[in-house]
Structures are given as C-alpha cells and as structure tokens.
Amino acid sequence: MPLSVLPRTLLPLAFGLSVSTYALAADLVLPEGFSAKVFADNVGQARHITVSPSGDVYVRLNSRKDGSGVVALRDSDGDGVADKTEYFDDTDGTGIAYHNNYLYVSSDTTVYRYALKKGELKPTAKRETVIADFPRQRSHASKPLVFDGQGNLYVTIGAPSNACQKPDRQPGVKGQDPCPELEKGGGIWQFNADKAGQTFAKDGKRYATGIRNGLAIAWNASVNDLYSVQHGRDQLNTLWPDLYNDRDNAELPAEELFRVTANSDFGWPYTYYDTRTSQRVRAPEYGGDGKTADTSGKFGDPLVAFPAHWGPNDMVFYTGTAFPADYQGAALIAFHGSWNRAPLPQAGYQVVVQPMKDGKPSGPWQTFINGFAGKDGFTSPTAAEHRPTGLAVGPDGAVYVADSVKGRIWKIIYSGQ
Amino acid sequence: MSVFVVFKVVPLLALLTLAQPLAAQSAQAADGDGEAVYKKHCLVCHQADGGGVPNMQPSLLTSEMVKGDPQDLAFFILTGTAEGDGTGDYDNAMPSFPMLSDEEVAALLTYVRRAFGGLDDSVEIQDVADVRKAIAP
Image (tube, rainbow over all chains, first blue to last red; front, side, top):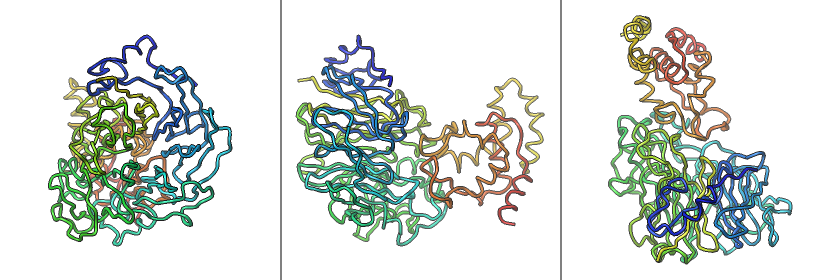
C-alpha cells in the first residue's frame, strides 16, 4: 500500500514554528504554538478515527480501499509520521472506537468489533457482530458510536429524511405528524457496551430523540454526559420559497450542540433553531411561518448554535494535558463544510474549539484549525482540497484529524509555552 | 414567449455571437429560461458548476444520463427517486418536479445538457410532453 507523506526533509521544519505551519502540511492554519504534521496520506475516504492506548491510529473508511474498510497506522519510531500501515475489514462505514481491548467499527447497518492483542496493529482475532440489523436507510445512514465507560454504547441513528416529508425534499409538502421516522431514527440509541450478538430491535433503547443527524457524538467524562452536534435541516428556500430566500437558507438553521441526557428531545422535525433570533421556531413543514417561536416547551435548546450547514462530522473532548489550559476539557468539533449554502459561498471546513467548564460552554467558540479547503469564497464543495471529518486524541495529548477528500491524517501538537 | 421559438433562433444567435466563448453564449443567450429553472430548483444540490456534492448528490459533469436520451432525463426529473427502494449510490434521493411545465423542463434539459454535458442540441417541448403523458396517461 503506497503511503505518501510529506517529504522527510521538510518534516523537522513543521516542529517548533511558533505561528503556524502555513507553508507545510496542506497549509493548515493553527494558533500560535501549535503545529501540524502529515501523519499519513491517501489512506482512503476517511470518516471517523480513533487511537488505541498504545498510540496506534485506526481510521474508518466510508468506501473500501482495495477491499478494506479500516486503516491501521503506527508510528514506531516516534517521529510523528506513521511508518507502518495495515488494511483490514471488508465492510465500510463511519463509526470507530477503541474500548476495553477491542476495536469497534460500524457499517450503516451493523456494529462489529475485533479483539486487539497486546502489540497487535492488525487484529488476528475473528470479527464479532455486536449489534445487527439497524434499519436500512439511504439518507443519514452512518452509525457513529461512543462509549460512556460505564457499560453502555451509544449509537446515532440519523433521520432517513430531511424534514420528515413524504416524499422527501419535495417543495411544499407538509411533514408527517407525528413523524413516524422517530421510532427508528432521528435520535441516539443505547446498547450494552460489551455484549456481542445484540440486535437493534431487541436490545436498543432510544436514549434521546428529535436529533436529525447527530454525526458528532462524544462522551464528556468530566460530567458523565453524552454530547452531540446535529446536522440541521436543509433547503428552507427551495422547499418553501414563499417564506425563505437564498440568504435565509444559507444562514438558517443552526448546527446545534446538545447535552444529551436520557429521554432528551431536541425537536426535529417539528422545529429548528434560528441562529438570528436565538430561539427554537416551528418548521415550515409543521405550519411554521419562518418566524414564530415554538412555545410547546417540549424541546431542549442547544448549548451552542453554530452557523448553518457547516456539517459537524465529529467531536471529541480534549482529555490530554499537552495543550494549553483553555483546551483542557474543551470540545473540539470537525466541521466538514457546507453544500447547502449554494448559491452563496460555502463555509465551515474547519475544526473549532468550544471551551467548556462544568459541562457548559465557558466562553465563545473559536476556529482552532483552518485552511483545509485551501481557499476561501468558493461556491462548490468539490473545490475544497481537504475536508475535516474525524477527530481523536492520542495518549500523548496530540490530536489527530482525518480528511475525507484525499484521506490525509494530520497529527496536531503543541510546543509553545 | 415560447421557449420553442427561442431555441429555433439558436443557430442564428450563435452566428452573430461567434466572438464569445461557446459555453458562455450557449448558457446565457439561448437558455436564459433553463438556467433560471436550474438556479431555482437544482443548483442547491447539484451546485452552480454542476459538480454535485461527493456522496450526497451526483455530479452532472460526469453523468451518463445528462448526455443520454433527453426523454430519460425528462422522466427522471418528473418522477425523481424518492419513492424508490431507499437505496442508491448517493445519500439523498432525487425529488420529483411534476410542477414544472413542459416548456420549463425542455429549457432546463437544454441548459443542463449544454452547460454540463457538452452537447449543443435543443430539447423539444413535445418530447417532454410525450414523457409526461406516458407517466400519467
């Protein structure tokens, strides 16, 4: 497997630069003291990423590369660049997580796991099925997964539509009421973390609902709660042109960060969160006029309302100690970048940091890593050189970022004072 | 104004505007209506450059259907895929656009085939009308 990386001669330069590594490592732009190294490149169409306690990096592929859907990467000489690569698993998907000596991976319909023996990069154990028979769906079919460390595994099941219209994404069509899609999607389900042989129907417990597509999920161990960032609904203007223009659609609705507790309901598809008025409003599919607030009191509010359509694909809480104090305990969120802002310029395509304290935001979010797209002001998503889609924290406190376009994996370190 | 008439004027317009780049004149001078339909209903998913969105909505630049029989494309636009079996190579289903008139669909097809398919013919309104009749006789 060819693994092309940044020329070795340039790599030492990537360390110790105080401002950024602008001329290196795909022009990523980082705050002072941080630098990025290309840990691996062209690994395949990356989605989520995880790091084992020994520092091995595992990347889940959305589309198999040469028949394999997981890439294992090891940096055996500690120079910040992977020097050993293994491919395995004949499925593809999004979710991947290390838990209790097992590597868990998900396809769109199944969660699997491999036992990882000490020292093993590529598992020799046979694959086990942990959860089978998730509903088959076309839209939002990814199955992100996260563990709480208390015996539970959480799996996002996205809504199989944009706004519960039938047919989907059809101009002027009302939403189904009540929305039957919430029975098997549009939420987060809880399973046993350690038991093989579960099924969605028998063993899954709907933990939270009204979440359109919580592709970014993470466990915040400092307060023992689940958090998720939702991909908000699309196409307000094309579906409801009498109520919304192009600019309205580009700016609405929020991508919402939720603190997800048992039985939370965040209001999809009946409502969305308005970034301009900072309130939850009725969706046009359910009688909304683009302005009227939802007064039902049934639905939770977001902790943070991020800009519309940025596409939050992954989130981690920074549990390391290598980064500055502001980053410790903070939520890092990978925004894959928009498509639904067209015809206006696309946006997102960055990793942000949301400082957190006691489970709540302790200050405004900021751009952490930028420059993935390689340009600004473009209108077509295919113009982006890279798009961040996966995040993980290594045992040394480094952060790994995965790119969906070229399959590049960056290692982000801090060497400032 | 009949779109049909506009299309018949194309060869003359083309002669008169030879100094302009071919793509620009065919997209703007001849197909104002089709481009407007594209912008209103299609651009949000398939994007201004027709490039689509990886994994979400297909590129029209590499689409066989765009370059193929215009009646197949008309059928696809009028019926969509949202009533299909819920699977596909792309995450999002294609909505149906039966609310568009035959004139609008013909203009749209002509625009899409020229701007993204590299073709220079015009789609006849009657071809679209025949497809619509075949769907719901």
